Image 1: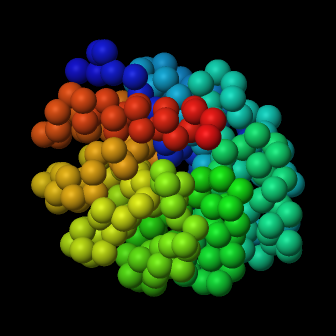
Image 2: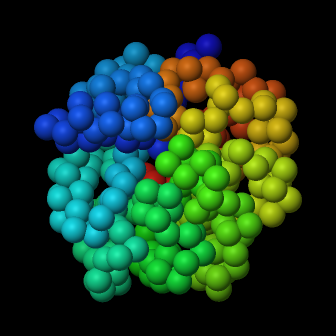
Image 3: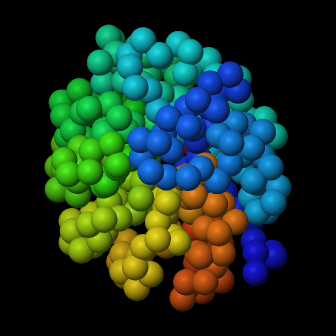
Length: 275
């Protein structure tokens, strides 16, 4: 079913070899999820080979400001090799975020990942707004976790209303092709709110973790309203299967050209073309 499609997975995670086993075990115990790979770069590459994924984008999550150097050194070391791209990471408690974001850009990393729940920061917090605005000035992409996370099952730090408020706060800089990426279809556990407040705005939505778990009709409705030219295929590996999620997207009632756009063309234009 995947034959003839190039695949760009815009949302994956790996850990350095020496901590991968412990990190995966801790997250499995805490979040109640079962990893599909071992969480290493080698495990992701095996998944890519088995699923026919051509390129995977790795999104590091910083849980403390002191991790800035180690996280971004690892990202720089793996970026641009063997079908792997990596964003950098930053924490809202980092001093001089403008300087640090310039460092990330100068390392050749095309963007950053922010995780409001793991960083205990609401998505419309002034610290995040400062970071996102500077990313837009520098031409960096920003991927944001949105919606439910087992770490904060009640108080979503990036619920749909807060995401809309964040977009309002950066609207004057959020021009041209999208550089903000809202993971999990903008908040997959609040699909009606996503359709009402986020669909159609100047952002990418990625499909991470949702394709084999969500209400397919609602997902299609959101994607249709938003536009398939602003949707990125994503698995959230190792927490979801790349192959299973590819097949799930291919099973949805979109045209072949729309599927190609979501699986490859949109990401190729965004991440593989210098602008």
